[in-house]
Length: 344
Image (cartoon, rainbow, N blue to C red; front, side, top):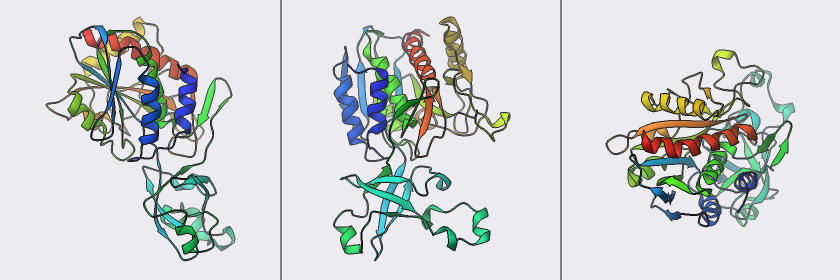
């Protein structure tokens, strides 16, 4: 049985863009199927649905979710010189990707994200971010015919990023949004449970979260807990009123975001539960941004939503970072919620 850090590294290094999460799903399945009381299956949407058997049946049926997929690129065209044009999968900041290494296609070919040579950039272009449509991937091919032997339109690419520990208890890696949420839920599944609950590792979270509502429809929970990451605003250049959260302050609880008004009774219950269990938490300080709860709470006849997020810096880029203490506090809170929400 792998540790949290081992699972986090394993998932960070796995390749799985939206709609192509099979490798990530298999890694999670192979691990959780050995946990006590866990029965796992894949639904028609591609979500991995894990039923956890507890000692008792709950008053409320609880579902926890985290998305397995990551941002990336889809090859759309190969030009006559063998360069690959692409479209983004998920929200990607084009300012941070030029010159980055990528892994392309099913064989993980090495490639480089290229742009117009710097000496050809006009003065007025320096003031405008480079558009993704103006970039390309160089795989070292000499011609379209050579490139077509290696990769085809429709194949994916991801950042070629490693994983490491650094600084004061921090980790750095690709796709921590939201593989960190997946790793936290794997920890929740490891121990014997007091009540039955369900964990869904969902697909397509980076493209409007259309895996999560499918999972919610199938599971039909009374309460859904969306486990995500939140963009930490404790870096230079972010004013206080726009800083959603900070690293090192514990998991983030939300009463509202741009897509969801969260169930106030449950919001207050979870904040009080965290205080009772001496688990540090922080309150989301802005309403911009949204996640899986936006779609989940509209499923079926309505599902009561809760959001728990791990603070992370630099999400939707080649790397993200998070503090392990925040992740561990999130796991502690999820464990308390897996009991408390069943009884509320």
